[in-house]
Length: 243
Image (cartoon, rainbow, N blue to C red; front, side, top):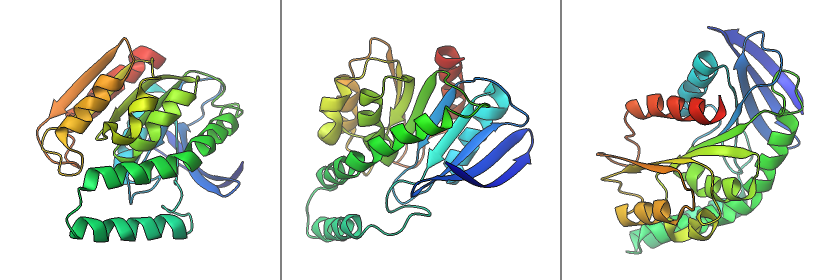
C-alpha cells in the first residue's frame, strides 16, 4: 500500500492510496491511534470512491463514531482505466434496452461479472488497511447500494470479518444465491418507485438474506432518492453492531 496524499479537516484525516493497481481512500479521526471499527463502502455504477454520497457518509462515520472508513474505485470507474470488456457490455446493454429488453436482468448479469474481480480486490484492501496502526484488526462493516449492493452481497457472503452490512437498491436476479449465505445483521434499503430495480426483485433479495436480524427500510422515491434520514439510521445501526 502506497499513500500519495494526506489532508485533514474538521477532525477527519483523509489519505489517498494505491494498492497495486487499485486506487483508494482512507478516512480516520485526526490523530487516531489504536484499533477501531472499519467500514468498507462500495460506490454506485458510474460513480467513484469520493462520490458526494460516499464522502458525506464516511465523514459522519469518522467524526461521530470514531470509525475508520475506506472506499476504492471498482474496475472501469474513478481513477482506474477504462475496462474494454466492461465498456463493451455496457454499450451492448444500452442498445438492448433501447430495443425493448428489460433492464434489471442486464444489470444483474453485469454486476455478477464485475463482482468476480471486485470481491478478491476488496479482501486485499481489508488486509492492507487493517495492518495500519491507526486502524488495526477491529470489527468490519460494509455499506453499499445499487452497484455497491450487487458487488457487496457476494463480498459480505464470502468475507468472515464483516459483522454487519447496509445494502439496498439491488435485486435478487444476480445475488440470491450469495444472499442465502449471509447471516450477519443487515439493514436493507428499497426505493418504492425504483425505475432501475423492480420492487419485487428488491423484496426478493431481502427475503433471500439468511440473517436472523434484518430490517427492511422502504421509502417513496426513485432509485437515487434515498432520504437523508437513512444516514442517521445507518449510523445507529453500525454503532450498535460495531461500536
